[in-house]
Length: 173
Image 1 (cartoon, rainbow, N blue to C red):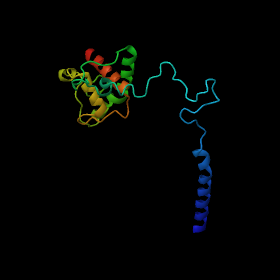
Image 2: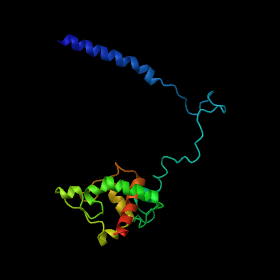
Image 3: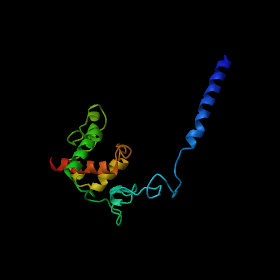
Image 4: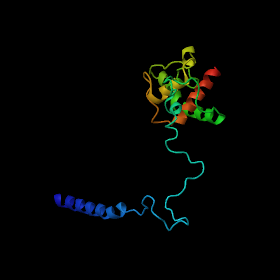
């Protein structure tokens, strides 16, 4: 009984061991190493025009946190340009992530509420309309009360798009 298991283990070990050297020794250039592949002799290629650094948005405090970097207070306005494209993206994300609880119109009558879950606040209430945009962004990012965080499901840009759409939804009520 144990002999076939021993053979399976031995074959598996040999098969995986055979892959190791080729996978560990990938062809690549060291930093600043000369290259014969390009006419300028450099292995590092210049950035393409319009390239945005990976940490560009992370360094923009208002976008990343919804707070004014000087006062620490929530920003009252949306720190991105509100365009038709942003509103369309916000509506799409709202319909995906928010309508199950808040409903299509934001009145807190979503499908999960109809199945016995506690109702979220009506987004058209005056108190909700008075909330700073940064606070709403923070709630989407970190959650609040029974609402959980959507930071792992949405990007920073998508969260601001949701805030912009929500403001439009409140204005059109």
